[in-house]
Amino acid sequence: MYTGPGHVLVAIAIALVVASAVSPLCGELIVDMPKFAEPITNVTVPVGREATIVCIVDDLGSYKVAWLRVDTQTILTIHNHVITKNHRIGVSHSDHRTWHIHIKEVRESDKGWYMCQINTDPMKSQLGFLDIVVPPDILDYPTSTDMNVREGNNVSLRCAASGSPAPNITWRKEGSDFIRLERSQQVHNVEGPVLNLTRISRSHMGAYLCIASNGVPPSVSKRIMLVVNFPPMIWIQNQLIGAFIGQSLTLECLSEAHPKSINYWTREAGEIIAHGEKYEPEEFVTEQYKTRMKLTIKSVTAEDYGTYKCLSRNALGDTDGTIKIYQVANNGAHSTTRPKHRYKNRNRTRIRVQSNDIRDSAFLSKDENNELQTHYDDEGEFEEYDSGSQTLIANLPLYTAIIVCAITLVYVHE
Ligand SMILES: *[C@@H]1O[C@H](CO)[C@@H](O)[C@H](O)[C@H]1NC(C)=O
Ligand SMILES: *[C@@H]1O[C@H](CO)[C@@H](O)[C@H](O)[C@H]1NC(C)=O
Ligand SMILES: *[C@@H]1O[C@H](CO)[C@@H](O)[C@H](O)[C@H]1NC(C)=O
Ligand SMILES: *[C@@H]1O[C@H](CO)[C@@H](O)[C@H](O)[C@H]1NC(C)=O
Ligand SMILES: *[C@@H]1O[C@H](CO)[C@@H](O)[C@H](O)[C@H]1NC(C)=O
Image 1 (tube, rainbow, N blue to C red):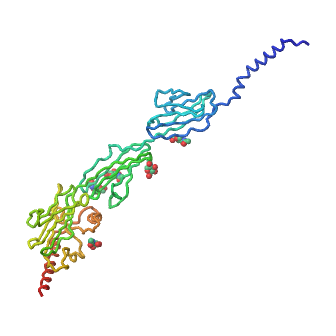
Image 2: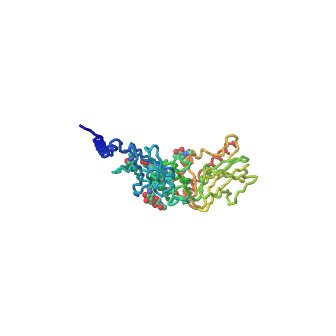
Image 3: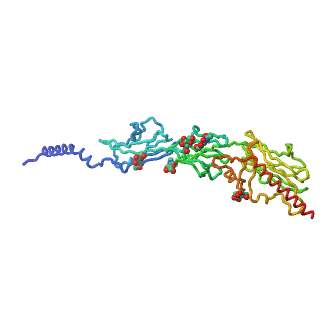
């Protein structure tokens, strides 16, 4: 049998036809389809920074990766090319496997879902969420500005802040551990955009801080000054003072007022006591609204016995307090300028709230903060006091003093 070259050619031709028909199929079976190596990790970025979202694709081959913005259905990048006109967007990759979309100077509007897509048929995609956080900022409106109020009124301090997530507002009082709320309740801080202060007293005066925080640094605060105005009040610890001729003596009144009062001393007839050889009036501001008034008589003479007045005046009113000096014998160490025995069981003093409105308040311990609380009853008002009996009570120690002096003198004579 003759097998000529013709048969060989036919066989090759058939092989080629078969091979050419099968080869595309072989190609697809051999090369793996692209697939995502892992889900996209959500990204959280503070506003203004750069955000990078990462999509990892195995076996990309000749396929291409595109990034899309889901909410707006826009294509941002394809492969190495930025499609969007947004110049803040960029794209990069390493080894055709790790694909980054970069968003510079992120804005709150960039927040949302982003899609990483491969142009297979059907296409493959996965999503990642970009969260933009914004540090808090206190809004000028409706945040309160500094306030001036009359004692006894109510005020609401307000604070509003923007930020993402929505910030929490906390109130503190500067330089104080407590904020005084209704019914003498004291708290370290108050949460919420409004700080209600009812029946304002002078102890509410000060700077309040509204602090906005949302976990995105930095937290911010605003300082709101609360100024509390009230007419002067005077406290006197020793209203009746025994002194002997020739001694040096200091009278003392405590005045509270805001705005700051003008303070001075007078004698019985109303003449103002000026600084001079004989007298030395002084005043010391002890706290924002408290003043210690002192009058030193350098050497007591016979005409110095009698009544002295300390007076305080501001735009809201005026008041005065009275101190009486009586004579005691100079028997050395026995002499005292502070007849403590007279007040042993009676630590009350007179104050005058208005010129003809005499009231009484339990006298206050050394703790000047307690002073105010003792001073007010629940209603923040003074207890009315009968002015008639008050005069009698006020004079009673004087009579006692005179009797004691008389007895002492008689005793000394014998
Ligand atoms: C990504 O963020 C979205 C939106 O906040 C959330 O629904 C989703 O569960 C988050 N995914 C992951 C993996 O944390
Ligand atoms: C202040 O608030 C208290 C309690 O809420 C109320 O009883 C009082 O009338 C208010 N005072 C003024 C001056 O508005
Ligand atoms: C503050 O007072 C106002 C009315 O004066 C009231 O509507 C509001 O609920 C109060 N807020 C708080 C936190 O007590
Ligand atoms: C606000 O305060 C609440 C309660 O203290 C807390 O659960 C929440 O996480 C705070 N929010 C922010 C944004 O800090
Ligand atoms: C004032 O009187 C009260 C009650 O009688 C008493 O508890 C307090 O200790 C007194 N204070 C002074 C400074 O004597």
